Image (cartoon, rainbow, N blue to C red; front, top):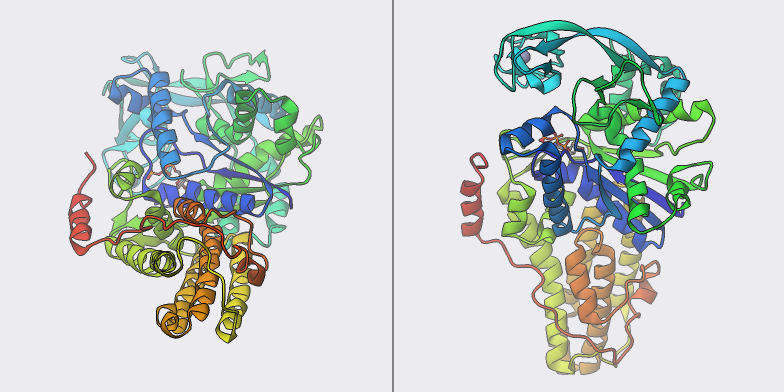
Length: 575
Ligand SMILES: Nc1ncnc2c1ncn2[C@@H]1O[C@H](COP(=O)(O)OP(=O)(O)OP(=O)(O)O)[C@@H](O)[C@H]1O
Ligand SMILES: [Zn+2]
């Protein structure tokens, strides 16, 4: 398990992501990437923007911009925000890249060879006023299920029923509003997922260590009702990956593009290609992550995503990979572990991009630094059930965990040392019973923490980390170096020497959660970030006489006034 490939569900391009999106995909993936790097493993951490599909075109039209220009701008916005949150991607690519186009066409060609793609004739809605077909969200009308009059061609937002454009009652064009519509025959490609059903079922059944959320969703789609359905993977649109069979034209498919859900997961692979190209590396360099016949056989591949993305990652994308591997020319890496999440809700309702409800990444960073958000979000990650963000809970976690426990310890120890012994690790004093007890407790806790991080049990890891911080505070409280100093300065020096080392240990263990504060702590201590496998050794790591500086206050408390103001500020709809 020395090389780890990590991907986060790729965020859609049509807006700024909310905290729900962040904690359901990119942030836990970052936690795991940082942890694995800290353990000395070779990590490839990939993400990208998901740029195709009708919502991107509609958002661009609304912004009055050509869709490619709109996507390029929004990619930069999302890239800057992910940097702001400290998301440590090796590459943040784009699904509209040339690399993804070529790979998507390549996989389609291979799947066709494997007999897993079929042409089918179907009726689609054609608009005379717009001179085009109206797939997915390009068409609106009344929901046949609930009567909602603004249902879209792919889904009714009111009752969530999945729809086809031809299901809508009184349909109209979402572009022009025209009702001059006609049902026309058109040809499309279908991915024959149903043929892969047994193979997929065997594979899913073999994943006994996966989260139940992941396997239960996969099994539901495999076997509920009529079972796994074939999927249309092409659309009559201009924006997207042109339909080609590898590098050759696909007769009858001129002017069509692949459906966004076909090309989006392939971007995981393309992002590695983009990563290599951006640095002038060769094909070998990214093949060793993705091609099991070219050096990737020892890679462990872990994916992160919210629950609504699970069907595509447990069934559709694996069909693409298994189907291609079955042709036998070359073999691609199949996912080893899928970490999925329930939803984070916002203050009694849902986060919603379309309704501008909740706190969005740009707003969050404009009021507090990334580590405050990272800590609350990860500590409350919606793993086994949905979770809820409230300002009260956020204030509590920041003030109690970050400020009172961790920040306070760092500040008390470094300031006390400076005033009594100067800015260097003091000498004198030896470890006694209190130290032995602390070391014992921490040894067990660090092992537990490590196990939770290996298992990607995020809430459990966070509460163990907090317990590790608390143990240090209790140690300081009970040994009271400020009192000991009056009677026995050497004893106080011993306590402080151990406590300075404790700060280094905390910085290293906490870095995956709160990377910026950890960096500040390590810089103040002039210390390295070696992982504390052996706690006793780690707590004697900084030698006597080692120079340090007192860091700035790590965390400011959130006042009740601030909290109340944010409750009001974020109650409505985002402008
Ligand atoms: N409230 C939520 N809590 C946790 N994860 C979420 C939530 N909403 C979306 N996600 C996840 O966020 C990731 C990125 O989602 P994406 O950019 O496609 O937006 P989305 O699913 O369309 O959300 P929205 O409809 O709110 O914009 C996906 O993995 C998705 O499952
Ligand atoms: Zn409906």
